[in-house]
Amino acid sequence: MKKKANTEHEIYPLLANRWSPRVFADKAVETETLKKLFEAARWAASSNNGQPWRFMYAHKGSDTYNEIFEHLADFNKKWCKNAPVLMLTAYKKTFDSGKENFHALHDLGLAMGNLSIQAESMGIAVHSMAGVNWQKAHKTYQVPNDYHITTAVAMGYYGGDVSDLPDDLEKSEKSDRKRMAQDEFVGEETWTF
Ligand SMILES: Cc1cc2nc3c(=O)[nH]c(=O)nc-3n(C[C@H](O)[C@H](O)[C@H](O)COP(=O)(O)O)c2cc1C
Image 1 (cartoon, rainbow, N blue to C red):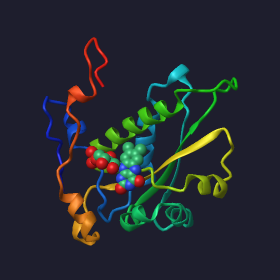
Image 2: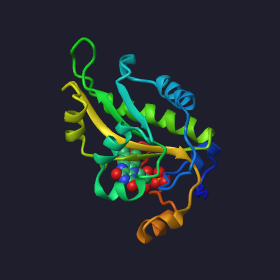
Image 3: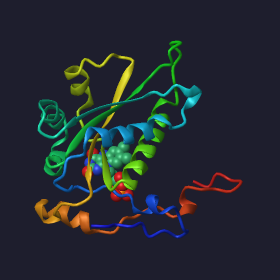
């Protein structure tokens, strides 16, 4: 299924075509393929070149995959079980100097943007999830205090059957993608929000 953005101005097709599905093709995403996605993330810009992004992933079928799944919010468990790859993202809160990196979350977002668009170019969908028990994940994986687990992410090739989803999710899968108008988030010469 495609859900191309209904853009008001022409944008790069990979950006318009990217979306966050809740079903995936029944096809593994090989580790070598994932490395290309992480390479795209690797070359994101970051404050002071601090590169504060961190990723931990697991393939479907592994114990760690099942473990990550158990950390998901119930809502996400309803659709996520067929994702070929599950991942946790995190950011490092300080620079190596020990100084706080105020922009670390920003830079994790940039890295995920790169990763998502690289994935899109390869027919792979990336669905981020705030609905993850990150406190529990910190304990499970003994994540040091200097890091903050931010999201879980489901990844897999586009495809799959939306009728496999519960009715409410099938409906939302088929609904239009919506965005604010530009004048709601862009101001020229004045703060209008
Ligand atoms: C940081 C972040 C957290 C999100 N958390 C969830 C989530 O927990 N569950 C879910 O189903 N979708 C989640 N999403 C997906 C958003 O709902 C989705 O990106 C948004 O509705 C826009 O749709 P699109 O990505 O298809 O354009 C999240 C997306 C982001 C970027």
